[in-house]
Image (cartoon, rainbow, N blue to C red; front, side, top):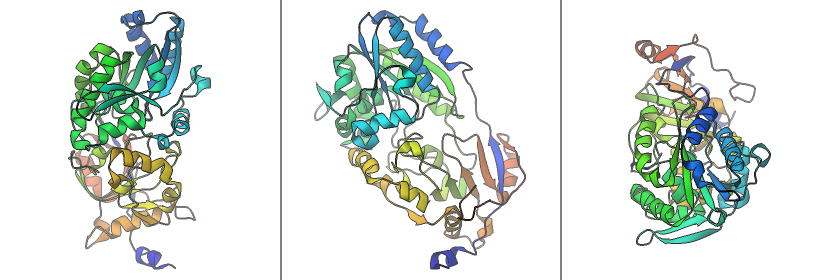
Length: 422
């Protein structure tokens, strides 16, 4: 027995109970149909003429129904005589190389076979002039060379700063389409300036480029599409702040304000730019955002395959597994951190042999006289928050919370022979 195992072997593990969290749940029964109805009833198709090349900008997040909506958009543009194609709009993600960015899109369902159009990936950019002192505005070369650009993105709260424009259309225009160079410009003075820089640079790009319109997507707390908004380019900066406020109202959250331990099964770039939504967990890698639950120890068990080894976010937690550590790729993770100028999120936490040891280490280090009193919650990830597991000692609080529904009896955690959950 190793010294680590001997130190952890006697740490008791709680029985866990599955509970369902209930959130406000507006939802579109047919998101593609809603998009087509809104799009066809708008005047946006009047911007399209036969033979136009149209770059459709898509990012690195796993957004519900986005591939299907983009496919429908492609069909509409083709029917109008246009020649659409896809460009990755994800800043420095994908290891800051064109092949990596294309691979990320393909892993999320944006394949050339499914969409029926090519993906044109490059890290080359064109400078559209200065948006302000030391703020050059960059844009993807393929997008710039097209006759028109369409932005498709979800609007949601950012994980590192606050402002009227956080994660959404303006950020995709500024950072996503700006590729690594544009992302670097916007991040150069830190997240404390991000809320100011994003709309200024976005305004310059909107003025100097061929962006035609955008499609804004909102999700509810169940990761379901609840709103689809086609927006003319001239209206993007006017309409996005209200959509951002609505997104914050709909965002998922934990039903508990204080815990000893939170276990996340997985993190990844397809879930959040920082691997997980820091707003849900209450752990942040910058001082420009606060709030959320108070949790003594946070652990991550795995990195999603779609993330291609990008372990951004591990540095914000306390423990992880050897399985996740072995997936961690420096070439996929560090370019993002070097560009954003935030090294904290890519540090390596304590690495344990398996899932069981992660649970035990998190509980052991909670400074409780009775380890049995540790309040523990386990979630799949921060976009799958409808059903979670809570330790048995949280049942009294759960029964008093009208937004929680208990759906199982207390059960022991089940581990395989390697000590990993199954």
